[in-house]
Image (cartoon, rainbow, N blue to C red; front, side, top):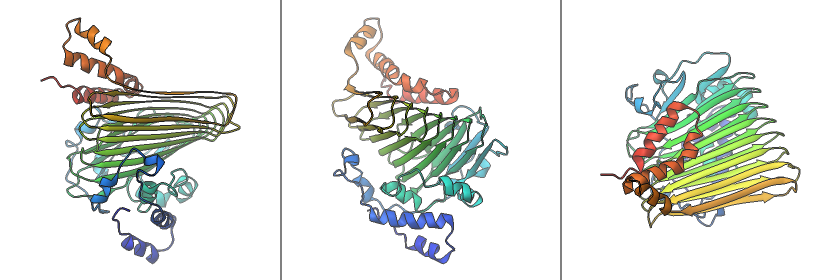
Length: 429
């Protein structure tokens, strides 16, 4: 178990009235204390060794910084969005954020929103993440004071992206726990960018949980960018609940952190839902990244599409475990899942495990996985036309990743990622 002392928090809760927030924290401490720290004997963590976390004494400390608007320009994706919320070291920074006042959308720091919207939080908050069985989600729920609340009202179309920027600038080993709740009302449309970044390469632990509710006949596009410190740890759970005829699109791009893990759980609660989950991780040196997905086809006439890609160099390690569950009454399900990986060195390694659990008979389901090196025929073709080996290598890597990057519909963000991709694997002298 991580070396975390809850004595001060438990004393604080016992001395206050049992508010909704304190009730969640009290239950979470109980759940967390009953769960074992994940290890390789657990099938869900079989290929992801996170024992390094035990070596550090992370503290529940968040604090402000002297970061200003000029400092964060490089993380603004090439443009200033109308809806932009900035968190530095776990603290919401009003001066760096947009002043949003509209009837169509509410964006607030979760620390204040949880007290101002208690009835709405009782309906949705801590209902979708697996805090009773997920060690890190339980830990996240013990101390809710950082993160974003987004509530998009019924029949609202939010055309501009909502950019949530979580920046780390820690000077000591710190545990920061963003907790987000996104609600998309009936017949609404929106794009939310959840962006994690760092100014330095210090050691810290980001333990994030995001719960998403996609209302009936609504469309929500969720993009997560993880470019944490190369010496940090980033573990997250994203839990999505979808109502009838709703549409959810996801793109998860990861290239930061010494160890990182994205767990994405999506459940269809009504007929006619469609979910598209795309992802790309780019690793080198000794980085380890783990993507775990689960799509629960609990209702009939629903579609899901998954495409995750990995690019690995050095001694890096990649893990993909994708599960599609088709319940007995979920007839007319259409589910597709694919994981493709390119290995750029002799010491990089990928473990991939696509899964289908089908309990209905009138379905179309398929999955596949590939692990290989750069195609030598393609290399020969490019070199035969006068293109140098390293340039040809860069072209082929870019082409491999382009399916995921091009699925992102925000122009500034797509250009931002294209630039990172070009710099990451450009080994020309």
